Image (cartoon, rainbow, N blue to C red; front, side, top):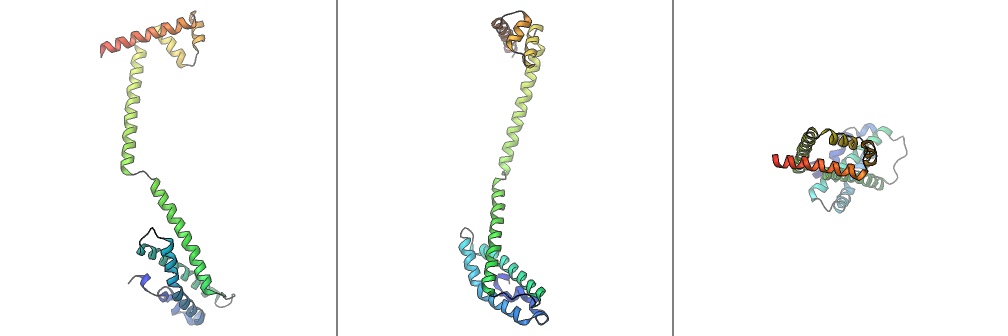
Length: 202
C-alpha cells in the first residue's frame, strides 16, 4: 500500500512509538491535525497542478506533506515541550506545506525548462553533420587557395601576400610604382588567368 493511501500515522509512526518520552499530547495533536488537513492539502495540489494527472499531483503533495510532518515532529521532539507551543497548529502546518510545495513546483519548473532547452538526439546529429559539412568546405577552400597561391607568378603572389598582411591598394601601388587603378586591374587580370587555367583543367 502506498504512503498516500495511509493516514499521518504512517509518517509519524517512529515518533508515535516514542511518544511517551517526549509528550503524548503533542504527537497525538499533530496526527489529528494532519489527518484533518489532508483533504485540504490534496485539493490545493489538484488546483495548482491542473496540467498533471491526479496521481502525479497526489504523489508530489504526499512527498511534500510527509516532509512537513517529519520536520515538525522532529522539532517537537527536540524541544520536548520546552519551547513555546504552536498556537495554531493547523495554520502552521498548512503554511509550511504551502511554502514547501511552491518550492517543489519551482524546482520542477526549472528542471523542465532545462530539459526543454537541451537539444534532442536528432538535433545534435544535424548539428554534427552541419559542422562536418562546414569542415569539409573549409578544408576544400584551403586546398584551393593553396593551389592558387602555388600557381601565381611572383608579382601576383607579392600583391596577394601584401593584401593578406593588411596593406592598402594605395600602399601596394606606391611600392610597385603604379597607380592604384593599374595595380588593381593587373591583379584582377592575373586572377582571371588563374581561374581560366583551373577551369580548363577541370
